[in-house]
Length: 295
Picture (cartoon, rainbow, N blue to C red):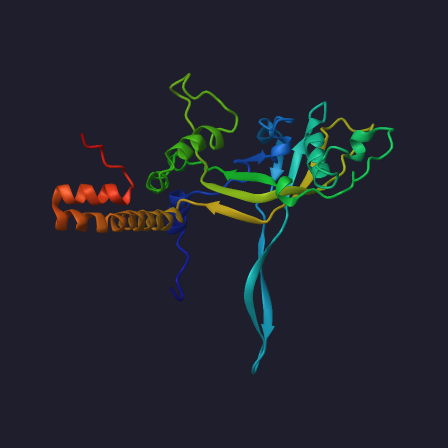
């Protein structure tokens, strides 16, 4: 509204209604490629990721000028890399995970990389690139709300999963995605599962850059590993966008039901024309069911 004066009460009410996003209420989960899943345990990664970033996105445009100023017409978008800062354990196995992930991409499937060859002569093909589909994984970024009312799944999210028939996936998300530390929430009545308010999944992800680890005799701090994650595309889920998704799923379900009924249309017409006996006889002919032998 034009010339609207600032109202402290309305501002306070808006903040109380929707709250404020806290950058420290997050969790990051990493799903390695199949070749590395059984070599490394990444269940503690959410505890080790000290800081992370929700990647930015920019539109790619073409410049067009007919008359007057130029127009920049969007035709696609470009993603930035995701940045992680990982607290290293004494064994520094976290660095080994990302290094092995990188080596999987450019050492013939990770079996003959320079880090594993020791003093032996390099094997033939050890620097060959691996197939792209074999090196990519998933990165899940989950942002949590501070308000308890927003720490539970929305009705639209539950209905969306039920409409799609993804009951098993919904349960898997409940125990795996939203409970990344595998905590037992049934030991105490005060414990409960906290659902993320915003979930971003980076698909076809891999570590494109692994930063240096600073070492210093004069320092008594903690060693940390900076990592940059490249990815192809991201999918985002937010409660305010789920109603449209639920409606789309209901429409998809309706089309499936109508399609199923249409397949039975000729069969229903056959029973109407030929009666029960004629319909069963025609059904048997269509299904190539042999007639019982006569005695």
